[in-house]
Length: 436
Ligand code: AMP
Ligand code: MG
Image (cartoon, rainbow, N blue to C red; front, side, top):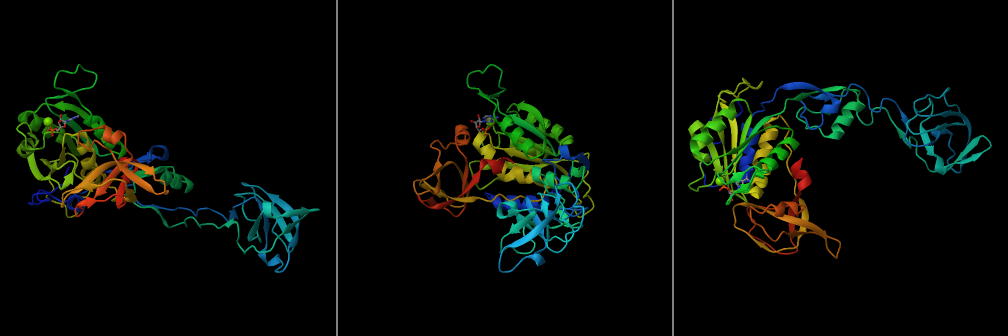
């Protein structure tokens, strides 16, 4: 895959700020995934490969927004109620038999086409009936309770831009426009490994000093939810040649190789050297907590599927993306959100989807070091004054999985923050927004 050029992350500082990593990914990584066609039923979660221009007006015709009586505004008395003769009845899916003439009304139902001549609809709740006539009140404006052709979207207007990651509402819009298929990008292929002599597969016997693998399950779920296609390549030992061999082999038929564990500076942490023997490390320390060691790099190519963008100023691109995440599960989650998520979206041709932190009130004091971004797992509650506040989970270690299961999301404390007082506003990312 040729999405990462050899010099694309030239950064030599000690700790790379998160925003810088995200900016580099946005600027230097090219989409790899070519187009394919899917039916609407299979389109949710995919990335649009081409703009969708509305082929028809939506709605296609003027129609009533309520159940009631269609009238001509010109017939309405400006001083008192108006009495109009009911001459027809039109339900959704049918048309009125004749045009509306002076002094007439037509009984109409929601979604029925506006009869010729009618421009306004009174809600049935506001009307009185009297011997074949309807008495309508004062005060309704011309055009009230009607929906005009094309008011939602006009034929020829951009309905969905290329790069939109299709949520169910986007698929619904495509259906409303009469489309049956969409051109999307193929799924990004991601190889996932865990590493560590102590890591064993759930379902097997747990030896002394061993730990069941949770990271592969976390990562596979996160990747799938972002539209990627996961190849689960199991658990690797802390053995540099074996790691090198495994990631190089995985690079041949994947767009991204993702590992967890083995990236810090312990004697058993071989991932950095393993990568350097088969590719190039582009950064490996992020100004983030939890999760400081994150090895991002390129495994030497060539990738078997050169992207269509080749030749558009991306020559020199030379390999498969590699990200080595830390081992602790909470650090895996946080660094996935901040590094892998934007990288995966970019590889898949998706438009950037910045994560916007929602302001909530902190219920806890906190001290932190300047210069790195911290993520605190918090639970929300409504305080006695009605304001939503965030409570910090007591055990905040990067290995404490229950800090993710017993909370609602991450509080994000920026680089320049050194302390948080209870009552201060902090930024909050709900898990639902991070997971999708
Ligand atoms: P490491 O970065 O390899 O030193 O790992 C840091 C911590 O994360 C260690 O306590 C590991 O046992 C733990 N860890 C590493 N990989 C996994 C995994 N796949 N599942 C659960 N815990 C892990
Ligand atoms: Mg390890």
